[in-house]
Length: 162
View 1 (cartoon, rainbow, N blue to C red):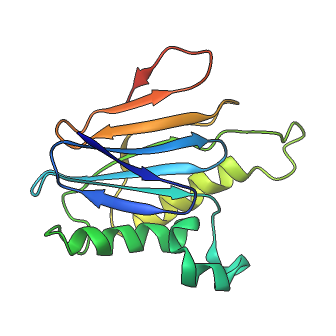
View 2 (cartoon, rainbow, N blue to C red; view 1 turned 180 degrees about the vertical axis):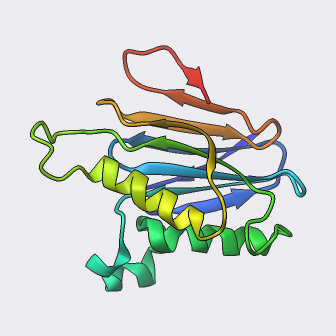
């Protein structure tokens, strides 16, 4: 078993049944997990911000940083692994989008990320079948390529699944 570890703004996919796809410490960021049952491929993007227009230069080096460029980039990568290039048949699950260090709701980055992710998914006629969004705690997300099971963990809490 090996881990495909994704940092902020990174995306990746695997169909190696021994792999775990994982990202750490999602605060306001969102892990978008795409699963293609046809090819048994699991992909994830660690989205940090809603829209790429705020920093077009960053899109060139890290398209996964933004919802509107990260999801299409992941779908394209998964298409190269035999999945439908339009995302047809994908199972979608989301985690993250917490309200971290924003007690007055000044920025609402977690909520804005969640809306941007869903808006981008809708362009592909996709929507989440499960999600764990919001709250005030960070999450680490692990996905088993073999089972598609998603395990979430957070300091001081027992692990849970979506």
